[in-house]
Amino acid sequence: MRLYLKFFVIHLKGAMQYKVSFLLVTMGQFLVSFNVFLGMYFLFSRFHEVKGYRFSEVMLCYATILMSYSLAEMFMRGFDMFATTIGNSEFDRILLRPRSSILQVVSGRMEFTRLGRMIQASIMFAYGVSASEISWNYEKKITLLLMILGGTVIFGCLFIIYASICFFTLEGLEFMNILTDGAREYGKYPLDVYGKGVLRFCTFIVPYALFQYYPFLFLTGRSDQELYMLLPIVGCLFLIPCYLLWRLGVRHYKSTGS
Amino acid sequence: MEQMEQGILGYQKYLSFFRMRFLAGMQYRAAALAGVVTQFVWGAMELLMFRAFYQVNAEAFPMTREALSSYIWLQQAMLALFMTWFLENEIFQTITEGGIAYELCRPTDLYDMWFFRSMASRTSKAVLRCLPILVIATFLPAPYGIVLPEGFKAGLWFLITTLLGFLVVVAFCMLIYIATFYTNSPTGIRLVAASMVEFLAGAVIPLPFLPKGIRQVVELLPFASMENVPLRVYSGDIAGGEIYIRAGLQLFWLLFLICLGKLLTKHAIKRVAIQGG
Image (tube, rainbow over all chains, first blue to last red; front, side, top):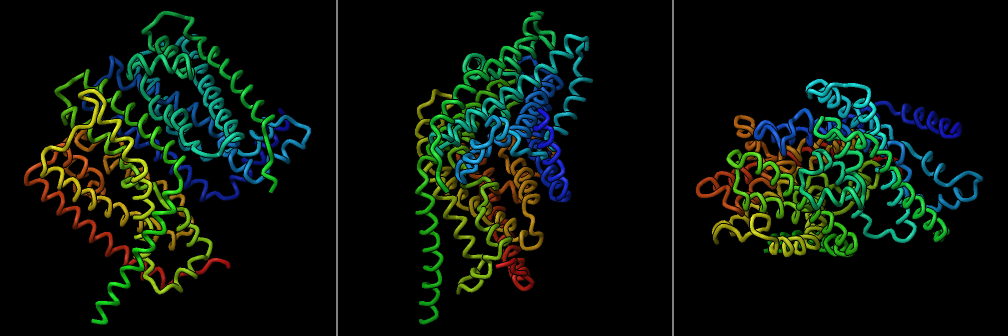
């Protein structure tokens, strides 16, 4: 952990060396997700609600997903860029060092420009929290926190899966975008908006619904099930198959030799 | 006579650039397959989302559902033609890393060459991806699938406005490339251009979904001359005399963007600084 903190500081200092470029890219990141917000805003100004969810509630939902996605992307960027790590045999060096490979990949890269998205998520949080008539007791606060953390873990897992597949093939990996970018894009609405089939997929195959839909029901008072509050933690079990896949990948690894 | 021959030869030059890039683009078949799957899921999710809004208030829907489905499937199928964020890294690198020196030595016009090159890489991407999506979308049940165009006239004008819209997109992207001459750090411009244009072109939500007032203004901008026109002509959402006005507007913006691009290129080349070597 101390090693990780050290890397963290180094990356932060590195990013701050190019302040203008950093600011521009951060602003760009902000704008990119801002047009999604605009789209939602105009749809809601026309329709006022969707499946009984009001604008402020959906904002809260979108903010959760955007926040956890950006957090995962910021800290797990190493997995996202893993194809190049294999391509230039950087991974050989990683295997030679006496530290865990996951730690090294994770601390190899951090993307602080994702702060742009986080700023947007924070603004939406502020709006959602104040405009939706939720009485914020302890349980609800913890639920929200767990939702964000659970989401970060799940997205992190997806990045690990992506990297693990890189061990086997570098072709056609674009489809993983469905699970990462797609979830960020379409997770802006509570998942039951898309119908039962999608909700089922997001509960049992890739457990998005465990940190988004079910706790959200509890948060907005649509359900009294206090158990829903803890579902993001259950969702973290997703780490296990991902870790196994990663192990399998590492065992399968053949250096490119360059 | 000689001049005419030269003219034809000059044209062939760019055509072979087109062919080169087109064939190169056709090599990436696995990527194309993954792209098709991604686009298909995207389209499906988009439709499901709009279904939820439709169930809330069907009367607030500014287009028919069939028109919306066709819009979304065509949009996904022809993504490569119309997305302004499909930019070629190689061109940016040429400018920032000094390769531009070689490009300037060629007996070709820089603007024309890059224009054809962008056209080629976009069409090659689109050709590989559009058919499978359209075929699957044809077989989807009624309000979700793609339907045939509204009559022969709509079909014909769809093709014409697609071509025009496509050229407007390429001409606009040329401006982004050229801006690199002036700043040398294209990332900021790229991101801003990509995101704002995407919204104004109707890629996030179709433009009819915008409220009155805002919509009228947005529809005059060059960005509304991109995918907005052909996708709505196809399903008869734009029909009758309106087609001519929109197509005329497309033509106007196309000429405007090309002239602006050529002027800026000329100006940029005069003061270009070659980076390293």
